[in-house]
Image (cartoon, rainbow, N blue to C red; front, side, top):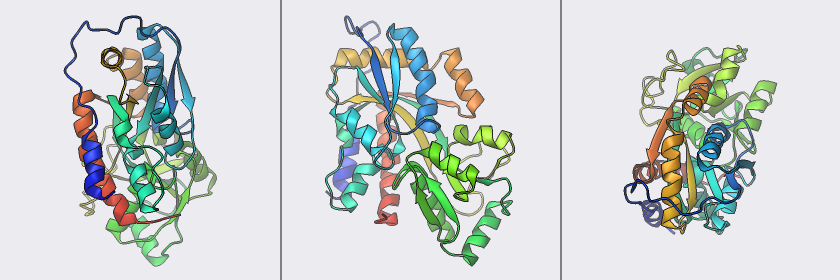
Length: 327
């Protein structure tokens, strides 16, 4: 499958009609709901899932259980498990922007894709933060320029951690490295949480991660943030410049988190979930949880979210093709 086929698959994500108001699924839910998070605890998807699950539980009246199902690099195992689940509204997926990238990575290696984007129905976007480049507070680099200058002197010697090959953190760092014309050494982990632990322990020297993942460690004086992959500075790190400000014009990367169900989910249940998520994303408890973590709500309902995915995935797939095969 070539890139045009991939983009067509992304663009084919179901565009649901406008919310019909009171058109709820009769009787749903009648039992517990599982929300798969395809990463370990501590990363952006987990940060998004837990406040959302608690709020959904209050609104839907049944337990919503977060199931961290890591593995496969970048979230492919959990994504695939959600794709295979019964389309009955009892298995949801809170995943990241790597959702569209991983099938393309499988094709780079001429292996069957673990799942296809077309198997999923977007329900709602929850967060959409730029990735940030962070290093230990004890590191010699005070600025992104310091980091780049050192990397140019020592090609392939500065290590960085990621959530797995072709995951969001990996693609963000390689996008930056390509623009800065530097060579870094990639060390993949099973999620952003383990990668952050490796950075704090000195196993790796840098990481690209979401603001909510980094902020507690920065506030505790353990980490320093050098650069922002977004198009604009953000309120939680107002003094951190964007890479575009620093001259790296083609570096733009967001680590969004969104809720999905299976593409064949019955329309009444999809509507029920969408209306519930519209309530969730205005819940004071959810807003406070995200604000405290340094991430601001970036809610989109299904139609707008589908369009956003198509545009964002095109940029990410191009970056993956540029990275090429990595083990």
